[in-house]
Image (cartoon, rainbow, N blue to C red; front, side):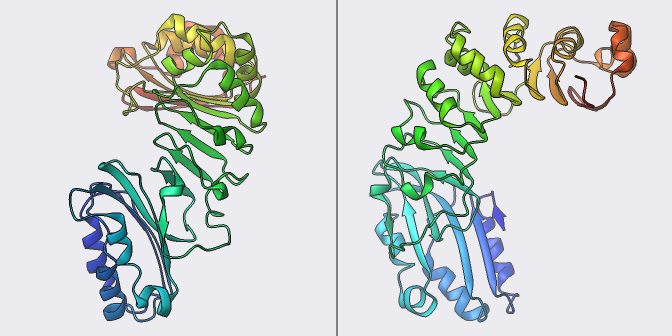
Length: 347
């Protein structure tokens, strides 16, 4: 069960009181506006309403303000009663850092979910109710790093991680280059990584095929497209490219890739790219540049800045632009200014 809105936690607990036969519960609360978790509340619920519960797996994300009564030691103590440690053998860990206002995460051990978010500068600062020796993160395959984490839990640096998202500011820590199984890489618009470091990261991960990145970051990584080694590696490796919003918010209609910039993208990625997700100015760019030049595309998701009833993309309109599109075997799904193309193999 996944919770994304503050307050839903209370609704979930109310509904659980009617499930007396429940034997296993997995709960992931990512609503960081939520108050700190309280093990006493869950203990009371389980003992009174869930007598058959044997497995309780959870992850609680919450806002931490040490000026209030939300110190992590105090929070952890509510999950360190005889009920948790002796009767149930349920253990927890809390990751945070010493900044007064910050996001913290408290979760059951071993970690039960595929997606793990790092919110601490150092795992040396993490506290737990028991130090289990086995791999606590063997279920994790997606790792999101929101801040610069200098000291990583070694159990997370495994080949199980295939999806890595680096959204923090500053240079990547050394452990990043120990990751060798990455299939998809997401780079936030504020990440500070040099072309040389990016080359190292690309070479460390032979299976990397998918890249999600804003255009300003992509321009930085390629040294304004002057670094030939980076461009060659991207051209050879990347099968899926998504040009994300430069401010890490949902794509705005006016946050589009200009024609000159798109031309550089096409020049580099047309060699191997099969899936492209991008925002452009008009449908003319789709017909005249993307579809015409990127012959390996199997799917294309494109959003148009310039769009109204007279500027829609249809098969009939494409054929009018170029007779070659008569033989284009594809389906087009339109959702206002967003178009999804699904194509058969073209080359």
